[in-house]
Length: 615
Image (cartoon, rainbow, N blue to C red; front, side):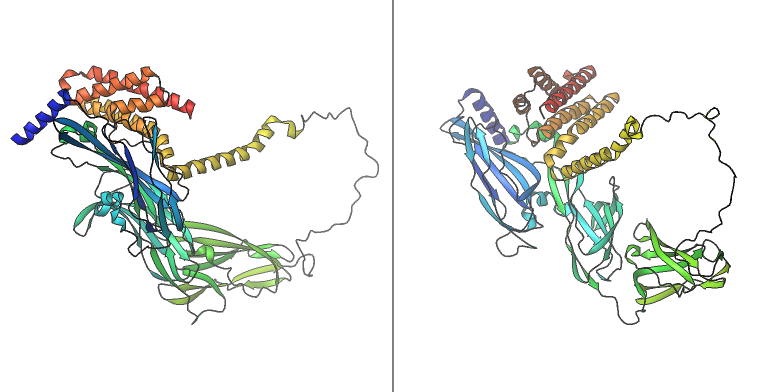
């Protein structure tokens, strides 16, 4: 301990009184990938390392055009090294910018040079060739997925799993997949990234979480907080081995930096008190389902394609009819199974009726794990002859997977009494009763203008502004739907766009926490929320890592975006006051924290207004 104390004392004295070699080493910029061969469903970690002396103000690297890869996450880390040679002190710093890349397709691609501009000079990295193969890469060319930094943060403490209720089914039989999140970490900003296409299946979405409802669960002796993310019902339409693609998602995980005992004196206080968040990509395993053909043994001659458990019923709008007058027959097939994939039920001999084309409507009900409902067929029948006529029974055949056999259900016969009409001939359509022309008057009826006034009915309809507005509403609604869809898709694929859109809301929530803390007299906690809200807001707005950002770096970033000096000065005053409240709480009062909160709101409003104008 004594040796450690004297070492720290000597370092501090050297910083104050000895000349520092600030430019003794040239800046170096290197790029590397954790693997050069990977599967199309895997990710690689692309790291740009910047090292040199006195590089606190170095800008974040400019990445090459990533047309073949999707940037699904990014983070950064830094380290410092102190050297004392011949009584002279020099400090070297290394900053790593880490990006998680997801390939868009299989093939051989080149990640171009990343560039860093420092003191008017541009540094470029070497290009890297990446081989992307279908499925798992295998061989020695790739590293296991656990080698990526985001997987190291997650690992056994955070993963998402696809749970399937059965792996071998008949064609048309329902499969239920539940996507579940397992966590032992502090999460935020959980969102879906890439959804499976479910090729070879008809799908029905049963549940999608709007917010995470966690419940405890023990897995392999460890306690996890688990939440159901999504539940989907699948009905196979093709036979053989069918692959279900992985589902991937993104989330932010709170991580803590490992402290070096010798250099902990120089640790950034923001990391010490706030911690850092790291963007993590999670992905389920791909699933394989063995889909079997329906058995030929015992298949009814009029099998409708239904797989599940069904019932059938029939009714008519009336049991009394007349020749050449229409009658409506309603047939309802109900139950659990692939209702949208069934064929029309088999009607009996209806030679005594003229039958017209049917129509059908579906009423699908989605329960927690099964799809049920009913399909209603409507037929128009016209009796040809009078007398008692029987309709039915109507049969419907389906395959019951629970019993592994075919079943046939039928309706009860319907007896309709048909009265004589205007003729016994076969009707070719809806018949209108004919009457002879009757003489009504024997003379011409003259117009009487004195007793009849024709009022004006207004202008033409197409000149009415309300009519024109109503015609434009569907177009406006379609444009709005396309814009909203584009916005949602961009939120899922563009991390920078998502951070900018959510920055203001996140900052307001932090300030709201500060207000609640002040109400309970917790000035130190309020100052922490204010400082965190300001730093996170600026980092999100400018799409830069929040880890390691100092007050000077925030000022430089805002100055480069044209923010007014008064706003930047107010920001620095807020951050300095918040730091004082945490490290010297007796030096500030609750009223000063309230003033800082008001100033923070003004700073956020000014930055928001300026960046919106320049966007």
